[in-house]
Amino acid sequence: MPRFKGVIRNVILSKEDMEKLLSMPLHETDKWSPVEVVVLAKWEDVGRALAKAIIEKIKKNNAAGKPSTFIMLGVMPVLL
Figure 1: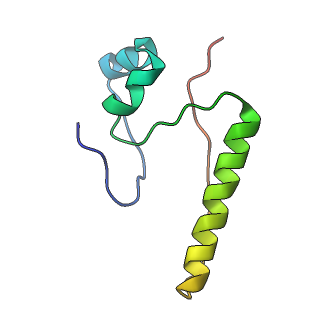
Figure 2: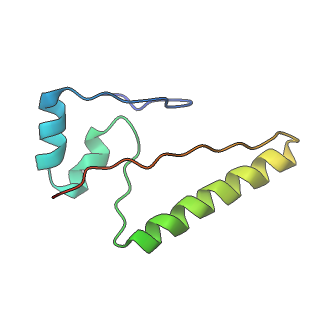
């Protein structure tokens, strides 16, 4: 599956693809996924990576004279 380009609005997985995603080793998910997959060890690392990405985008937009608006909803598989 080729990687998406531009803005990703949503990704819908079939039941079979979701089962594959949840059963594959973590190191294989990035090769399989149409979007970049980054596995981080701690929630604090996730927060730092997200903050850094936002800061870099704001700096880039500011330099280009463009506004920056972010709406993010974190979604991930949760094991219960």
